[in-house]
Length: 406
Image (tube, rainbow, N blue to C red; front, side, top):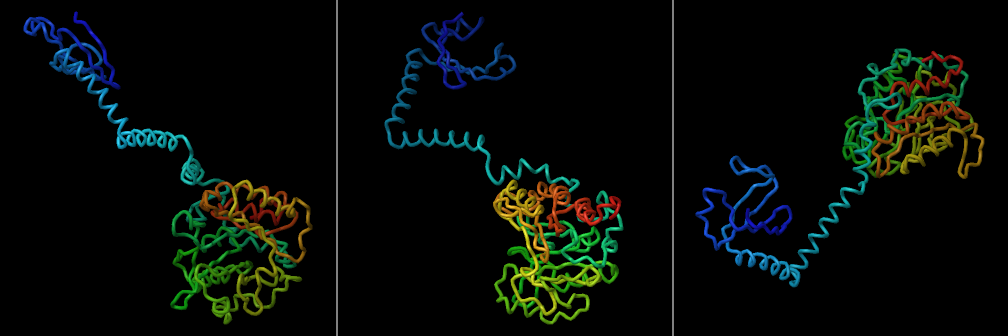
Protein backbone atom coordinates (compact mmCIF):
# COMPACT_ATOMS: atom_id res chain seq x y z
CA UNK A 1 0.00 0.00 0.00
CA UNK A 2 1.39 3.42 -0.89
CA UNK A 3 2.39 6.08 1.57
CA UNK A 4 -0.32 8.83 1.80
CA UNK A 5 -0.28 12.51 2.83
CA UNK A 6 -3.54 14.51 2.60
CA UNK A 7 -3.65 18.19 1.62
CA UNK A 8 -7.25 19.52 2.00
CA UNK A 9 -8.41 22.14 -0.50
CA UNK A 10 -12.08 22.69 0.34
CA UNK A 11 -13.98 19.62 -0.72
CA UNK A 12 -11.10 18.46 -2.93
CA UNK A 13 -8.19 16.50 -1.44
CA UNK A 14 -4.78 16.08 -3.04
CA UNK A 15 -3.02 12.90 -1.93
CA UNK A 16 0.63 12.10 -2.47
CA UNK A 17 1.22 8.39 -3.09
CA UNK A 18 4.24 6.30 -4.05
CA UNK A 19 2.46 4.20 -6.61
CA UNK A 20 -1.13 4.80 -7.72
CA UNK A 21 -1.38 1.60 -9.70
CA UNK A 22 -2.51 -1.81 -8.69
CA UNK A 23 -1.01 -4.90 -10.31
CA UNK A 24 -0.40 -5.63 -13.11
CA UNK A 25 0.34 -1.98 -13.90
CA UNK A 26 2.40 -1.27 -10.78
CA UNK A 27 5.65 -2.55 -12.27
CA UNK A 28 5.41 -0.11 -15.19
CA UNK A 29 5.39 2.98 -12.97
CA UNK A 30 8.88 4.52 -12.30
CA UNK A 31 9.98 3.84 -8.75
CA UNK A 32 11.47 7.34 -8.34
CA UNK A 33 8.23 9.12 -9.22
CA UNK A 34 5.34 10.06 -7.01
CA UNK A 35 1.90 11.23 -8.04
CA UNK A 36 -0.85 13.41 -6.71
CA UNK A 37 -4.42 12.16 -6.77
CA UNK A 38 -7.37 14.53 -6.75
CA UNK A 39 -10.28 13.20 -4.72
CA UNK A 40 -13.66 14.84 -5.32
CA UNK A 41 -16.65 13.76 -3.21
CA UNK A 42 -19.10 11.85 -5.33
CA UNK A 43 -19.79 8.45 -6.83
CA UNK A 44 -16.83 6.99 -8.70
CA UNK A 45 -17.31 6.13 -12.36
CA UNK A 46 -17.71 2.55 -13.43
CA UNK A 47 -14.43 0.66 -13.11
CA UNK A 48 -12.79 3.28 -10.92
CA UNK A 49 -12.72 1.06 -7.86
CA UNK A 50 -14.36 1.60 -4.53
CA UNK A 51 -14.74 4.75 -2.48
CA UNK A 52 -16.97 7.76 -2.36
CA UNK A 53 -14.83 9.92 -4.61
CA UNK A 54 -13.77 10.40 -8.20
CA UNK A 55 -10.03 10.08 -8.87
CA UNK A 56 -7.81 11.86 -11.36
CA UNK A 57 -4.07 11.16 -11.46
CA UNK A 58 -1.46 13.92 -11.75
CA UNK A 59 1.84 12.41 -12.73
CA UNK A 60 4.23 14.70 -10.93
CA UNK A 61 7.26 14.24 -8.78
CA UNK A 62 7.13 14.88 -5.04
CA UNK A 63 9.23 17.99 -5.61
CA UNK A 64 6.65 19.29 -8.10
CA UNK A 65 3.89 18.55 -5.60
CA UNK A 66 5.78 20.56 -2.98
CA UNK A 67 6.10 23.37 -5.51
CA UNK A 68 2.31 23.26 -6.00
CA UNK A 69 1.73 23.68 -2.28
CA UNK A 70 4.19 26.54 -2.12
CA UNK A 71 2.52 28.13 -5.14
CA UNK A 72 -0.90 28.13 -3.48
CA UNK A 73 0.55 29.77 -0.38
CA UNK A 74 2.34 32.40 -2.49
CA UNK A 75 -0.91 33.12 -4.40
CA UNK A 76 -2.85 33.83 -1.20
CA UNK A 77 0.00 35.89 0.19
CA UNK A 78 0.21 37.94 -3.00
CA UNK A 79 -3.57 38.49 -2.99
CA UNK A 80 -3.57 39.64 0.63
CA UNK A 81 -0.61 41.99 0.19
CA UNK A 82 -2.05 43.74 -2.87
CA UNK A 83 -4.74 46.45 -2.60
CA UNK A 84 -6.84 44.88 -5.33
CA UNK A 85 -6.52 41.44 -3.81
CA UNK A 86 -7.39 42.57 -0.31
CA UNK A 87 -10.37 44.51 -1.67
CA UNK A 88 -11.53 41.37 -3.45
CA UNK A 89 -11.32 39.33 -0.22
CA UNK A 90 -13.26 41.97 1.76
CA UNK A 91 -15.93 42.21 -0.96
CA UNK A 92 -16.24 38.42 -0.96
CA UNK A 93 -16.66 38.32 2.83
CA UNK A 94 -19.14 41.22 2.74
CA UNK A 95 -21.19 39.49 0.06
CA UNK A 96 -21.44 36.32 2.14
CA UNK A 97 -22.51 38.30 5.24
CA UNK A 98 -25.12 40.22 3.22
CA UNK A 99 -26.56 37.00 1.81
CA UNK A 100 -26.86 35.56 5.32
CA UNK A 101 -28.68 38.68 6.51
CA UNK A 102 -31.06 38.68 3.53
CA UNK A 103 -31.97 35.08 4.26
CA UNK A 104 -32.42 35.49 8.02
CA UNK A 105 -34.05 38.94 8.36
CA UNK A 106 -37.71 39.34 7.23
CA UNK A 107 -38.28 41.94 4.55
CA UNK A 108 -41.20 44.37 4.53
CA UNK A 109 -43.61 44.61 2.89
CA UNK A 110 -42.81 41.62 0.65
CA UNK A 111 -42.24 39.14 3.49
CA UNK A 112 -45.39 40.33 5.25
CA UNK A 113 -47.49 39.89 2.12
CA UNK A 114 -46.00 36.43 1.55
CA UNK A 115 -46.47 35.21 5.12
CA UNK A 116 -50.10 36.33 5.11
CA UNK A 117 -50.94 35.25 1.57
CA UNK A 118 -53.02 32.32 2.85
CA UNK A 119 -55.35 34.83 4.51
CA UNK A 120 -56.62 35.91 1.11
CA UNK A 121 -58.87 32.89 0.90
CA UNK A 122 -62.55 33.75 1.30
CA UNK A 123 -63.79 33.58 4.88
CA UNK A 124 -66.97 34.40 6.80
CA UNK A 125 -66.01 38.09 6.83
CA UNK A 126 -63.84 38.60 3.73
CA UNK A 127 -64.43 37.74 0.10
CA UNK A 128 -62.82 38.44 -3.26
CA UNK A 129 -65.72 36.87 -5.12
CA UNK A 130 -67.13 38.85 -8.03
CA UNK A 131 -70.60 37.40 -7.57
CA UNK A 132 -72.69 37.99 -4.43
CA UNK A 133 -75.36 35.41 -5.23
CA UNK A 134 -72.82 32.56 -5.26
CA UNK A 135 -71.49 33.33 -1.79
CA UNK A 136 -72.44 31.34 1.31
CA UNK A 137 -75.35 32.88 3.16
CA UNK A 138 -76.76 34.84 0.24
CA UNK A 139 -80.55 35.12 0.11
CA UNK A 140 -82.77 37.32 -2.00
CA UNK A 141 -84.14 39.15 1.05
CA UNK A 142 -80.97 41.26 1.07
CA UNK A 143 -82.43 43.01 -1.97
CA UNK A 144 -85.13 44.59 0.19
CA UNK A 145 -83.85 44.37 3.75
CA UNK A 146 -84.70 48.05 4.44
CA UNK A 147 -88.39 47.29 3.98
CA UNK A 148 -88.38 46.01 7.59
CA UNK A 149 -87.10 49.34 8.96
CA UNK A 150 -89.49 51.74 10.65
CA UNK A 151 -90.26 54.85 8.60
CA UNK A 152 -89.74 56.95 11.71
CA UNK A 153 -86.09 56.12 12.19
CA UNK A 154 -83.62 58.94 11.55
CA UNK A 155 -80.84 57.97 9.13
CA UNK A 156 -78.30 57.99 11.97
CA UNK A 157 -80.36 55.36 13.80
CA UNK A 158 -79.80 52.69 11.18
CA UNK A 159 -77.00 50.15 10.95
CA UNK A 160 -75.89 50.53 7.34
CA UNK A 161 -73.38 48.25 5.55
CA UNK A 162 -71.10 50.21 3.25
CA UNK A 163 -67.97 49.90 1.13
CA UNK A 164 -64.85 52.03 1.04
CA UNK A 165 -63.58 53.09 -2.43
CA UNK A 166 -66.62 51.29 -3.74
CA UNK A 167 -65.60 51.24 -7.41
CA UNK A 168 -61.87 50.46 -6.97
CA UNK A 169 -61.63 47.19 -8.87
CA UNK A 170 -58.43 47.59 -10.89
CA UNK A 171 -54.85 48.85 -10.77
CA UNK A 172 -53.12 46.17 -8.71
CA UNK A 173 -53.07 45.21 -5.04
CA UNK A 174 -52.36 48.72 -3.73
CA UNK A 175 -55.34 50.25 -5.56
CA UNK A 176 -58.01 47.54 -5.53
CA UNK A 177 -60.49 47.62 -2.64
CA UNK A 178 -63.54 45.72 -3.91
CA UNK A 179 -64.22 42.66 -6.04
CA UNK A 180 -68.01 43.01 -6.35
CA UNK A 181 -69.29 45.45 -8.98
CA UNK A 182 -71.86 48.01 -7.82
CA UNK A 183 -74.84 45.95 -8.95
CA UNK A 184 -73.63 42.93 -6.94
CA UNK A 185 -72.88 45.07 -3.88
CA UNK A 186 -76.46 46.34 -4.02
CA UNK A 187 -77.79 42.79 -4.34
CA UNK A 188 -75.71 41.74 -1.31
CA UNK A 189 -77.27 44.48 0.82
CA UNK A 190 -74.69 47.28 0.69
CA UNK A 191 -76.43 50.65 1.01
CA UNK A 192 -73.58 53.13 1.49
CA UNK A 193 -71.05 53.91 -1.21
CA UNK A 194 -67.78 55.83 -1.19
CA UNK A 195 -67.36 57.20 -4.73
CA UNK A 196 -64.09 58.90 -5.79
CA UNK A 197 -64.29 60.88 -9.03
CA UNK A 198 -61.86 62.84 -11.18
CA UNK A 199 -62.73 65.66 -13.56
CA UNK A 200 -60.83 64.74 -16.71
CA UNK A 201 -59.50 66.96 -19.47
CA UNK A 202 -62.54 66.16 -21.59
CA UNK A 203 -64.67 67.60 -18.75
CA UNK A 204 -66.18 64.23 -17.80
CA UNK A 205 -66.36 62.66 -14.35
CA UNK A 206 -64.79 59.21 -14.08
CA UNK A 207 -64.21 56.89 -11.17
CA UNK A 208 -60.66 56.89 -9.80
CA UNK A 209 -58.62 55.49 -6.96
CA UNK A 210 -55.44 57.49 -6.66
CA UNK A 211 -54.06 57.91 -10.16
CA UNK A 212 -55.85 54.83 -11.53
CA UNK A 213 -58.91 55.30 -13.74
CA UNK A 214 -61.41 52.64 -12.71
CA UNK A 215 -63.16 52.55 -16.06
CA UNK A 216 -66.59 53.65 -14.84
CA UNK A 217 -68.16 57.09 -15.29
CA UNK A 218 -70.37 59.04 -12.91
CA UNK A 219 -73.39 58.72 -15.26
CA UNK A 220 -72.95 54.93 -15.22
CA UNK A 221 -72.72 54.86 -11.43
CA UNK A 222 -75.84 56.99 -11.13
CA UNK A 223 -77.79 54.84 -13.61
CA UNK A 224 -76.79 51.59 -11.85
CA UNK A 225 -78.07 52.82 -8.49
CA UNK A 226 -81.16 54.48 -9.98
CA UNK A 227 -82.10 51.28 -11.78
CA UNK A 228 -81.81 49.28 -8.55
CA UNK A 229 -83.95 51.76 -6.60
CA UNK A 230 -86.55 51.82 -9.38
CA UNK A 231 -86.99 48.09 -8.89
CA UNK A 232 -86.73 48.11 -5.08
CA UNK A 233 -88.58 51.18 -3.86
CA UNK A 234 -88.34 50.22 -0.18
CA UNK A 235 -84.62 50.87 -0.25
CA UNK A 236 -82.46 54.00 -0.05
CA UNK A 237 -78.78 54.38 -0.92
CA UNK A 238 -76.20 56.77 0.54
CA UNK A 239 -73.58 58.03 -1.93
CA UNK A 240 -70.63 60.01 -0.63
CA UNK A 241 -68.74 61.75 -3.46
CA UNK A 242 -65.30 63.35 -3.31
CA UNK A 243 -62.66 64.46 -5.77
CA UNK A 244 -59.71 62.13 -6.43
CA UNK A 245 -56.38 62.61 -8.19
CA UNK A 246 -57.16 65.54 -10.49
CA UNK A 247 -56.87 69.00 -9.00
CA UNK A 248 -59.89 70.81 -10.36
CA UNK A 249 -60.98 73.66 -8.13
CA UNK A 250 -63.74 72.74 -5.67
CA UNK A 251 -65.99 75.18 -7.55
CA UNK A 252 -65.32 73.53 -10.92
CA UNK A 253 -65.89 70.09 -9.43
CA UNK A 254 -69.10 71.20 -7.68
CA UNK A 255 -70.41 72.68 -10.91
CA UNK A 256 -70.65 69.18 -12.39
CA UNK A 257 -73.33 68.34 -9.78
CA UNK A 258 -75.17 71.66 -9.61
CA UNK A 259 -77.78 70.55 -12.13
CA UNK A 260 -78.77 67.32 -10.39
CA UNK A 261 -82.43 67.18 -11.26
CA UNK A 262 -83.08 63.46 -11.39
CA UNK A 263 -85.96 62.78 -9.01
CA UNK A 264 -84.07 59.81 -7.60
CA UNK A 265 -81.93 62.22 -5.51
CA UNK A 266 -83.12 63.39 -2.10
CA UNK A 267 -83.31 67.19 -2.41
CA UNK A 268 -85.49 68.24 0.54
CA UNK A 269 -82.69 69.21 2.89
CA UNK A 270 -80.14 67.60 5.14
CA UNK A 271 -79.99 69.56 8.40
CA UNK A 272 -77.26 68.26 10.74
CA UNK A 273 -79.60 68.93 13.65
CA UNK A 274 -82.38 66.91 12.09
CA UNK A 275 -81.52 64.30 9.50
CA UNK A 276 -84.16 62.89 7.14
CA UNK A 277 -86.01 59.77 8.20
CA UNK A 278 -86.08 56.39 6.51
CA UNK A 279 -89.62 57.11 5.33
CA UNK A 280 -88.46 60.38 3.74
CA UNK A 281 -85.75 58.81 1.59
CA UNK A 282 -87.15 55.46 0.48
CA UNK A 283 -86.44 55.00 -3.21
CA UNK A 284 -83.88 57.85 -3.15
CA UNK A 285 -80.14 58.45 -3.40
CA UNK A 286 -78.91 60.39 -0.38
CA UNK A 287 -76.08 62.41 -1.92
CA UNK A 288 -73.26 63.59 0.37
CA UNK A 289 -70.57 65.98 -0.90
CA UNK A 290 -67.11 65.90 0.68
CA UNK A 291 -64.61 68.63 -0.10
CA UNK A 292 -66.91 70.70 -2.30
CA UNK A 293 -70.22 72.55 -2.03
CA UNK A 294 -73.17 70.21 -1.97
CA UNK A 295 -76.01 70.74 -4.43
CA UNK A 296 -79.03 72.43 -2.91
CA UNK A 297 -81.05 70.17 -0.67
CA UNK A 298 -78.37 67.45 -0.43
CA UNK A 299 -75.96 66.66 2.41
CA UNK A 300 -72.49 67.97 3.19
CA UNK A 301 -70.51 65.05 4.60
CA UNK A 302 -68.42 67.03 7.10
CA UNK A 303 -71.51 68.77 8.48
CA UNK A 304 -73.51 65.66 9.27
CA UNK A 305 -70.95 62.85 9.75
CA UNK A 306 -68.80 61.89 12.71
CA UNK A 307 -66.28 59.32 11.51
CA UNK A 308 -63.38 57.08 12.38
CA UNK A 309 -61.33 56.90 9.21
CA UNK A 310 -57.75 56.14 10.27
CA UNK A 311 -56.27 54.56 7.16
CA UNK A 312 -52.50 54.73 7.67
CA UNK A 313 -51.70 52.78 10.82
CA UNK A 314 -50.86 49.22 11.79
CA UNK A 315 -53.56 46.59 12.24
CA UNK A 316 -53.61 46.66 16.03
CA UNK A 317 -53.86 50.46 16.26
CA UNK A 318 -56.61 50.48 13.67
CA UNK A 319 -58.54 47.72 15.47
CA UNK A 320 -58.42 49.67 18.74
CA UNK A 321 -59.73 52.81 17.03
CA UNK A 322 -62.54 50.90 15.33
CA UNK A 323 -63.73 49.38 18.61
CA UNK A 324 -63.29 52.56 20.64
CA UNK A 325 -65.30 54.54 18.11
CA UNK A 326 -68.01 51.88 18.10
CA UNK A 327 -68.26 52.10 21.88
CA UNK A 328 -68.27 55.89 21.95
CA UNK A 329 -64.75 56.20 23.33
CA UNK A 330 -62.73 59.20 22.25
CA UNK A 331 -59.06 60.17 22.51
CA UNK A 332 -57.44 59.11 25.77
CA UNK A 333 -60.19 56.50 26.30
CA UNK A 334 -62.45 59.12 27.84
CA UNK A 335 -66.06 58.07 27.34
CA UNK A 336 -67.96 60.52 25.18
CA UNK A 337 -71.66 60.41 24.52
CA UNK A 338 -72.27 60.23 20.75
CA UNK A 339 -73.58 63.40 19.18
CA UNK A 340 -77.26 62.63 18.78
CA UNK A 341 -77.51 64.62 15.57
CA UNK A 342 -74.41 63.12 14.00
CA UNK A 343 -74.33 60.26 11.54
CA UNK A 344 -71.61 57.85 12.63
CA UNK A 345 -69.35 56.25 10.01
CA UNK A 346 -66.88 53.60 11.19
CA UNK A 347 -64.30 52.71 8.54
CA UNK A 348 -62.69 49.28 8.92
CA UNK A 349 -60.61 49.87 5.78
CA UNK A 350 -56.84 50.35 6.02
CA UNK A 351 -54.29 51.31 3.38
CA UNK A 352 -50.82 51.71 4.84
CA UNK A 353 -47.32 51.12 3.45
CA UNK A 354 -47.27 47.49 4.59
CA UNK A 355 -50.69 46.05 3.86
CA UNK A 356 -52.58 46.53 0.62
CA UNK A 357 -56.35 46.85 1.21
CA UNK A 358 -57.12 43.16 0.70
CA UNK A 359 -54.61 41.93 3.30
CA UNK A 360 -55.82 44.48 5.84
CA UNK A 361 -59.46 43.59 5.17
CA UNK A 362 -58.77 39.88 5.71
CA UNK A 363 -57.87 40.79 9.30
CA UNK A 364 -59.97 43.84 10.13
CA UNK A 365 -63.26 42.54 8.76
CA UNK A 366 -63.18 40.09 11.67
CA UNK A 367 -64.16 43.05 13.85
CA UNK A 368 -67.65 43.32 12.35
CA UNK A 369 -69.15 41.01 14.95
CA UNK A 370 -67.51 42.90 17.84
CA UNK A 371 -68.58 46.28 16.46
CA UNK A 372 -72.24 45.29 16.16
CA UNK A 373 -72.23 43.53 19.55
CA UNK A 374 -70.59 46.29 21.60
CA UNK A 375 -71.45 49.61 19.91
CA UNK A 376 -73.40 52.13 21.95
CA UNK A 377 -75.19 53.53 18.89
CA UNK A 378 -76.03 52.46 15.33
CA UNK A 379 -73.52 53.40 12.66
CA UNK A 380 -72.56 52.88 9.05
CA UNK A 381 -69.83 50.23 8.93
CA UNK A 382 -67.56 50.71 5.92
CA UNK A 383 -65.55 47.75 4.60
CA UNK A 384 -63.15 46.60 1.90
CA UNK A 385 -63.94 43.20 0.35
CA UNK A 386 -66.93 42.38 2.58
CA UNK A 387 -68.45 38.93 2.37
CA UNK A 388 -72.20 38.49 2.19
CA UNK A 389 -72.13 37.16 5.76
CA UNK A 390 -70.31 40.29 7.00
CA UNK A 391 -72.91 42.49 5.28
CA UNK A 392 -75.78 40.49 6.76
CA UNK A 393 -74.25 40.71 10.25
CA UNK A 394 -74.42 44.51 10.02
CA UNK A 395 -78.00 44.36 8.69
CA UNK A 396 -79.09 42.05 11.52
CA UNK A 397 -77.95 44.62 14.10
CA UNK A 398 -81.09 46.58 13.13
CA UNK A 399 -83.30 43.68 14.24
CA UNK A 400 -81.88 42.32 17.50
CA UNK A 401 -85.10 40.48 18.32
CA UNK A 402 -85.25 38.79 14.92
CA UNK A 403 -82.09 36.71 14.41
CA UNK A 404 -83.49 35.22 11.22
CA UNK A 405 -84.09 38.60 9.59
CA UNK A 406 -82.17 39.46 6.41
